[in-house]
Length: 640
Image 1 (cartoon, rainbow, N blue to C red):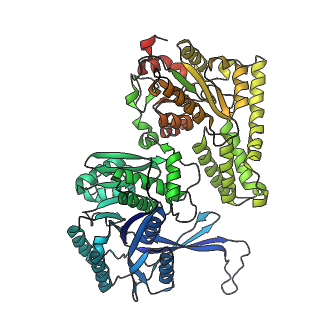
Image 2: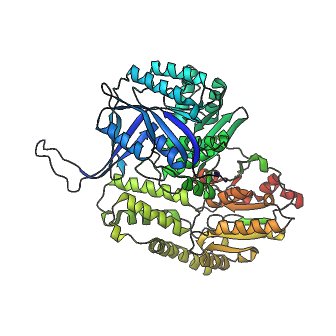
Image 3: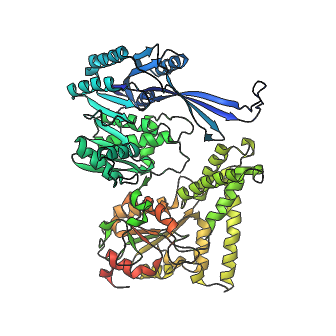
């Protein structure tokens, strides 16, 4: 998506709402003491910092993304924190002429956020007992209306208790909104969404759910697990105005008169911090609208901006235009999250174990696939069965270092959860990429001194040495005739390779495992002959994923060959990487929820990640190849 023509949009916007300040404390028990006065333990503050929040954070993000003129309207207290807010906004060249100071009954909204060992402790909040001054409210609204013709867009922000948005203020603001419908009005509210009706609404699942429940008088059918598309459509029909419903990691829905559009969430390997994500989404959305993109395109920019923000830990990230553009060019998406998270929605083909995710591919072929791309481990071979547990064990020990035997069970469990999440998100990628993310976890958890952290290649060697010991044992048993080919491959996989070859398909093998190891294993097990398109594995370049390489090579060949279409090409795999690559380029993606221990039947734990990766169909193994052939229409070129 080519997003932007200019690096700084010469437009003006206003942001009206709750001005907040986040104060971060990073604490430790190191060098702490017992208080002489109270005899209570103390904490050492290793670091602290200020970050703007609420409407002021939205303002900063609008500037960093590229909107030239941003003015802010709101109230702060006559206190130390109010001065800091003014300083930080002025530093970023935000217009603060209408950021007014209330002397009495008003504290600046400040959130004291305390982190210990990378975990956030309970917050301490200032400003929950504020009483906005009516005369100052009038001044703010009068000035907004006086300046309104210079603004392309006005954002209404509401997110704190005893906000500026009391009944008096909301009634007056609604009169202004009704008089000036030539301006784009966007509301981002926690509790006031139904107050400002004549606006474009940007709200999240929780806000949408609470509002729908309220509007339907707590109808018992409205539960917190209600479908987001239902919420979005219900509110559009109620307001009769466009809206955006954000869905966290699952992206967003945009509803207009043309219908509901899905914006897929982005797949991100790194650990994320969602603080400020909504503000970044709103800023990206506003930027897009200022650039004259439609609402859906603008929400796509917002989705990218929110993801950039989430990658910044322990602070509210401020995405830049370059960061958003870079992410847009290399982003991976999460598909069909509602189907993925609820197996009750599964649709099976004719009482078989073939799950249909994308009904559009039924009978989409008129012949056997021109090209088949196979993943290796878990799709054909099970020589590496159990790699996840080996990687998990090694990563936990590496993250904890010398403290492994000393730390609490809860700490081990917390680290194990982080490792499980990493493995889940990175299954199918090159091992070296997983090890780079391991280093990030080592740094975040802080059990190992920075001087003792190895590089990713060293950690890969530690893991590979242990894994290849197990692989070698299985290969030796195979060579000695103690186990046969059926004991080390997924059921029906060799017959499937033979079938595709006999029917003229060009077959490729693409694996995230080191290329030499893949070639040796395929040769030892005797099926390397089927891969007429070639065998591809990791060659140590993190920028050259073998699955991406094969598909890019394939796309180039198709462009030169009018007799081949991408829709006639199939990718088989048990990992989300190959599913995503297939989805990006229009190939049919068939995921294997293979049980590598039994070598047949399904491992349901693979289902969610394969659907999120973009699988069109799911199969447990290749014993259902006849039914798969029938479903897709391959049998028109001969029955298996």
